[in-house]
Image 1 (cartoon, rainbow, N blue to C red):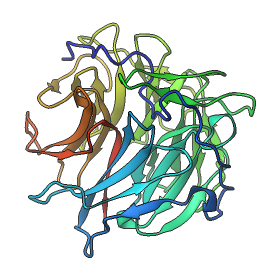
Image 2 (image 1 turned 135 degrees about the vertical axis):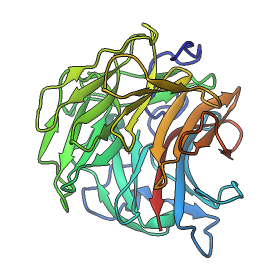
Image 3 (image 1 turned 180 degrees about the vertical axis):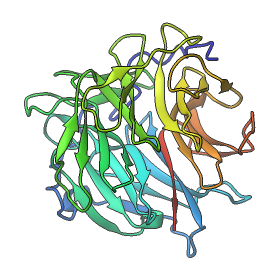
Image 4 (image 1 turned 30 degrees about the vertical axis):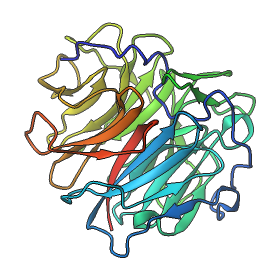
Length: 348
């Protein structure tokens, strides 16, 4: 059960961007076109990629720069194998598809802070395509069985609305200006244009996950101190706020995912809680090594990877819990002054 709310976490666990500076400038690439304005710089590419790759998106609190690091997810050595720096904008969300291609959601990149999604081959070696239409402040993504892609967005769709996201060196996060009517855009397989969307009662959609029954779950920043999780039952466009017990009334929810038994996981304050019926009280919680987990992802063997926004004063990390473990077996470091905002696992 979650028992503590980190004092640094006030309002927005979405991806952050430029430490009070604002958008980084540059135009959002057109959907499907090569992202020339968002050319990324890759460093430290390994000659041979591991079979499973861990990706972690980070924010440097001093510079406002965003970077995606990648690691050997199951290796005995945990230093980063390489990195990808994004410009313009800040990498907000990460997810992968069945081929191992990596989706990097970027915010604070275009007019009013809007963003885009770049898709790379495994190991971030090559930019494949860009999604630039039908998204506003993308914060996460997931696929259903039919290959439809669900992309959570932190703000509304009208061009006059602002999507700028900020952070300060103390890690306090907020979204500035405009409506907070977040939504989920649904992209059919092979399309860079969404065909439909999920809206109310979403306020600020931090991330998205689907279970085996195709129910859609969102971590939702309510704009206050009691963040929640919203479920859209399979095939429904009407969401409902899930009722939880034995969690703090004033709580921060950083990420959601589901395990192999379709239990809902939510990072709530300084714990990761397991809800076997998608509501009620947690059946169990992970607290060792967990502090403000902004990213959750399962590996193919059931290992749970959690990205901590901050586990020490100025440093985030990623921790790995083997199946059934109550404490992490290994951790993956990011540079000092970097917080982890999203994680994913992909195959080469």
